[in-house]
Image (cartoon, rainbow, N blue to C red; front, top):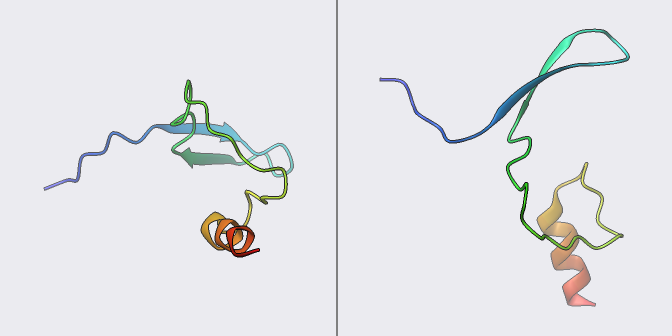
Length: 56
């Protein structure tokens, strides 16, 4: 049996390599007001960064 998923998937072209890349979950937070602190790097795991800031 195949797993079903409500996850959105978008395929885009990488401008540097020209290859097609699948981006999972793109647009999943569309329409949701989600405040993100300026100090959070979205390319790194978010939870440890947030917990580190809360401890200060």
